[in-house]
Image (cartoon, rainbow, N blue to C red; front, side, top):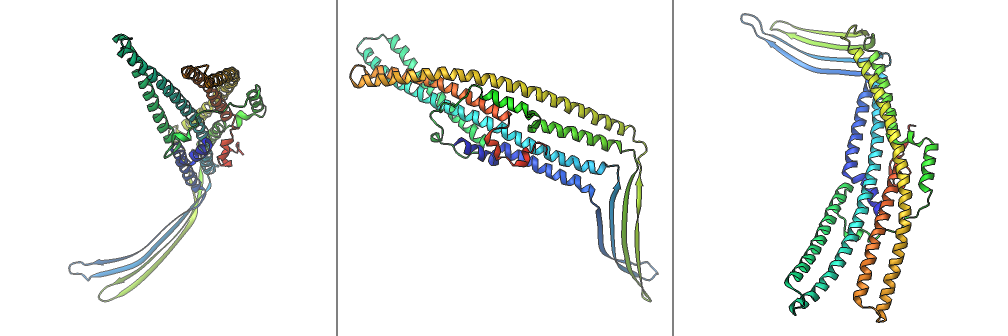
Length: 422
């Protein structure tokens, strides 16, 4: 059920919808930058009529048809136009990688929150059962108080204990509903019934060296350099190189070709004569634009590009080092949690057996229902502890496979978003 929600979240989560808009904006920017590689064509077409009336002179009328068309094409800009267009392509790739990384982060967060919902639901069931037992006991205490077996202060303290237990249950119920609302909003869900939240998690299958083996394989194949975030830094460094190339051309002559054609077709009329004049003009040629001095703006642009390249290279190194630390910590934590699970599962098996024995002895009349209830209380406590360990391992494992980019759910992303720079 959770996998279905994760797949739907790719298309309907508010976070992913925002990333989709950013991707669309990157596509628009790429097209705008690439437009410089193509010729620019301008034109206008119009008709005009003019009447001139002067005192003591004849009225003159003129009307005519006019058009003008121009075409401009960059010819040689030392590679700056192509570099400008290439930056648009890089920014589109960066948007794709950021989209993929945002989905990985969202998947991990949704899993964590859903596991939290399972725990809150189990906790609520446990607290509700304990409250039910306490209320049964309190009824007996009230009967004892009515018969004079308890003092007013004693029954008052017991009443406070019951009210505090009711408050605890109400608070857990409220927290569960609030957590559901947060989860639904993050996943883009319209509703999520309590029935869709499992009562318990199955014990995770685990091999002691599983995490170690995956991380070792990741490192052997230079997987860190192929993660979307590492590729983003690689693209940013490339963009800095292109910006430097563009900056170097700012004080160099740049060549463009142009051509234009226009027509002026006018008719002049007076009371005694009518004349028509048509003038056609065509021009074409080459224009060389040369910025000789720009107040050291070119120098600052080059220095800025070089500084940006150093910054992004350093950020990439910091990211790779942080990734290695995270993988090492997750591997150790996962292995330790697996050991904790092995112990808690043994306790759970013992508690299950103890509860079964108590129920069987109650059937035989050897134990009271109160003893069975106490055995169930102990069982719920052990079960909740086992659930906590299972949730911890699932969360750690989710983060690990996400950082390694081997999470099966990430296959729902478009293949081009995970092309590893190809």
